[in-house]
Image (tube, rainbow, N blue to C red; front, side, top):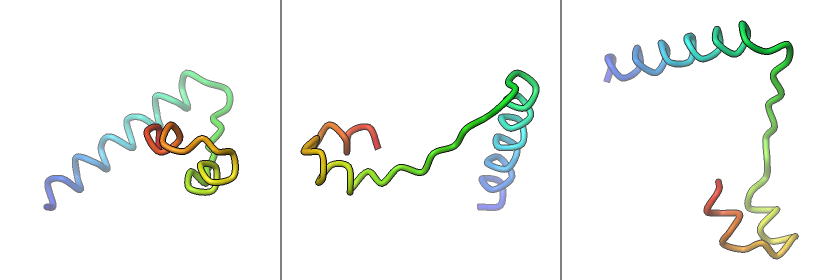
Length: 50
């Protein structure tokens, strides 16, 4: 388990450094997939992407 945590931590550190180096801005959006599928009648297509 500890090895997996170290691997995940290494991934996030590496990826965040790559994003910070290559881009001026990084936008993160927290989408409500359940709400979108119900309100917009997207149904299964929204859940397949989430």
